[in-house]
Length: 81
Image 1 (cartoon, helix red, strand yellow):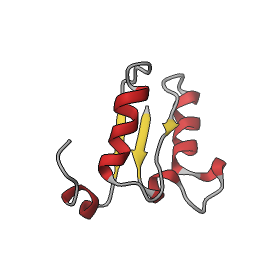
Image 2 (image 1 turned 135 degrees about the vertical axis):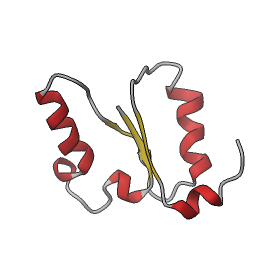
Image 3 (image 1 turned 60 degrees about the vertical axis):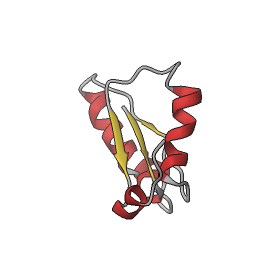
């Protein structure tokens, strides 16, 4: 599972092991289901968040799940890509 979003998705100010993505990964791994990759970036625009993975990572990574966590105003202010 790939998680993308802003500072709250990244877990800014939270210890790495206590971020929701770490907790989620521990639960999913216990069930032998998924790894969780946190690709969230603080202070990145919605378009900026999508551009890097689209160009660099998605051709190499296959993921069954993509979790996007953005504030509504970030999405409504985004320009079409």
